[in-house]
Image (cartoon, rainbow, N blue to C red):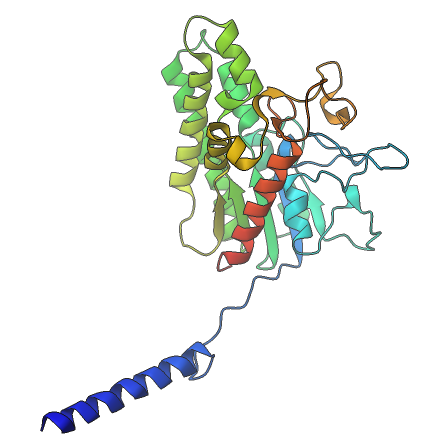
Length: 316
């Protein structure tokens, strides 16, 4: 009797194994998940992700080896890295002369959350979002700076509550796009207290730890944004820029950074004009920060790769 039961059990297990193998290979009526293949990319946000019509960016611009002029494809910002991962370009940096560039650039210098909301309105006034649209968003640093500059005339608690309100407003914009059938990759913002601006404020202001306050504002913004995002596991993918920059600031050598507190670009050069030839004497592209609140190209590349990984792995 024991032998008969054992044989039946073995046959049952073998049948289950075959069924699992067939299902895993796409048989048995089980549908495979196809990799996400967008038709275009639409970028919303602030200076961290923008490309100007001149091809210049708000980081350390790369130069053509022969002409020594800014080469827009060099030292790409994160939105470029994300786009190029799908073979897309923006018209602002169409060095391949693509007839109809698949990238739409709405990100702009100085933009805040309300500006992104308005840009989405602008887009929807004559276009739409579809299941093959990859929409990238990173904005909020300028909101934090605006709120911070109201202190101490406005108390900390009020400013933190306003940071939360703006984080919630950003989540609502991402949800708008998702509910309109777009596919969203949205990033948290880095802790503004970690920037050269934040570090300088800590040294120059003696009333409170200003860098810590900037971090509080940034965290309040990020947490509220994350809490209010559409969380269906499909339409919205999240990139944790805050945690990434925190780790780099904590362990710079492990990530290949030689400086994580100073701005590499000279202060007498306009932010969009900073290049590899206008850096401080001891600075390099391995510094975390290009400007007072601007990421250097190495960090931009890292964030772009994180966004690309999220876009490709999210079940859009």
